[in-house]
Image 1 (spheres, rainbow, N blue to C red):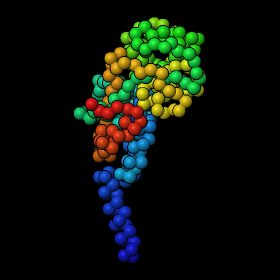
Image 2 (cartoon, one colour):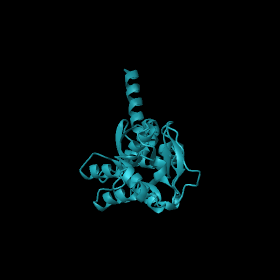
Image 3 (cartoon, rainbow, N blue to C red):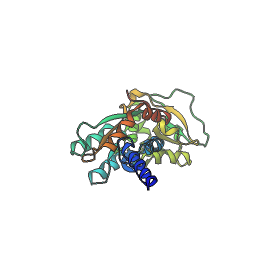
Image 4 (spheres, rainbow, N blue to C red):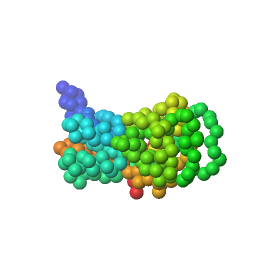
Length: 256
């Protein structure tokens, strides 16, 4: 009998001390597709703290609209400030919970098939249309998805957009653009530097100058009505040294 009581007491203590959260409590993050490797790496860390991390990954615009329509998210991580502002303007973000969780860089990637390229610096006037020849440039939808929005901005600044806009392979998110290039379905692709680390079948062809596009910032925030201890624990982990190490290991840049 004493042994049973002791076992029950140990269980109760474990439930009460799992980082201040209920053991087994789940937290759902709707996050930009490019953050998947980071959240996958942090899931075991949270599990040890008694929190089950559930993630939904897609383009930031798609996720923002799903949250607006009532999707059950606790935290939202966007790949740009535009879609975070979209939810804030609609009163769907918990007051004062927004913070920057990471930054990134924009790069042009190439797949496994070799081809000849001009021996000149990548910059204004670079003949990207000649490099593409009759093949396509994979890019997340530049009308809605942050990676594509940054890409169109950078290509416009470098005087390349008008020459390649009729050769685009528009994708639903940046991961899809990455996979098109990895499979050889597009010669080049516009992705984040962190995405280039996700496949051994792609390599960086060129990096876009930071001044050619708006800063790539990932804001995260708690959804209104979901501000509880376990959710705050997850938010704190994202910007902690441990969380920032996970972002950097995945090819992101740290929080300024």
